[in-house]
Amino acid sequence: MIRRILGIDPGSRITGFGVIELKEKRQPCCLLGGCIRLGAKEMPLRLGQLFTQIQDIVKQFKPTELAIEQVFVQKNALSALKLGQARGVCIAAAMSLNMPVYEYAPKQIKQAITGKGNADKSQIQHMIQILLTLNVKPQADAADALAVALCHSHMLGLDK
Amino acid sequence: MIRRILGIDPGSRITGFGVIELKEKRQPCCLLGGCIRLGAKEMPLRLGQLFTQIQDIVKQFKPTELAIEQVFVQKNALSALKLGQARGVCIAAAMSLNMPVYEYAPKQIKQAITGKGNADKSQIQHMIQILLTLNVKPQADAADALAVALCHSHMLGLDK
Image 1: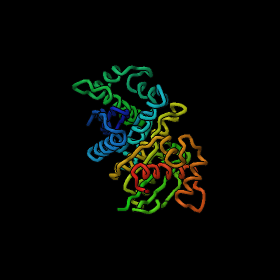
Image 2: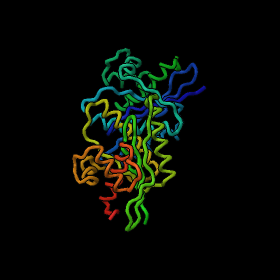
Image 3: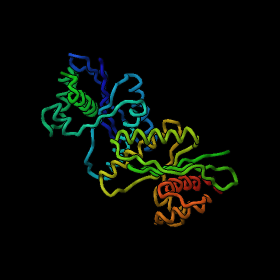
Image 4: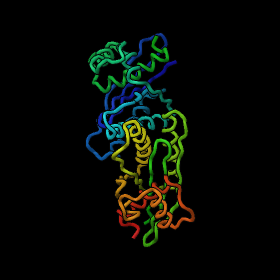
């Protein structure tokens, strides 16, 4: 059975995304990685754009599930609110197309990808490039999105 | 021209909603008011339920626009994140059905409904009952949702 995992690293300005494909007894394969930049439009328009672009990815690549970072702490309440809005939109985009959603804590993701729960962004980028045998180092938000997708596949034991 | 405004007061546990109809030279009329209780399910399931129920209301009542409270300050970052998620889902539900979204600050809404920017919840409920000639006092979250819808109609000069 082939499974495709959509990983998302939501943000109020930049949202990273990535799709990995898992086939039995094969290395996970990266189908897509990138980021959505929401620019300086009014917030409802940004959220509408984010919703549409996530749904477009889902319709095109047909992932079977969504893996998304679980956020606990934010610097301040306003940035938490903005992040929450983007996160809610991404989850709604997946749920409205009947995809199950899995949440992983940042530490869990870093541990799964680098073996260390406090790894920094550049370590994540480095390990994602190696684990998915990418020709170039992925952009930071795309790497975080691919990391949560890979973390989900680790948890399912699908990449063994 | 008939306009219908969907007002939403989003919350991570309870989301108030209300639909008012505006016809030229008539008092605004309440078509619907109520609240969605999300229960104790996992967060993605709650957000998926919220998205579906808001879209169901839109499909049934065909509002022409969404008015939603603009939130600035929250007690703490975690509650801001949760509120943001619910808010993002409501905005995405409207935007994905091509409804324009209007945001109003809490002070602006209270001022429009009660004449005082620091009115309390019971004043809002009282004034909503009077302004929309309701037989019973509306539930608090439904009243807040109808308040932001009425505030939008005031701003547009549609209820004059």
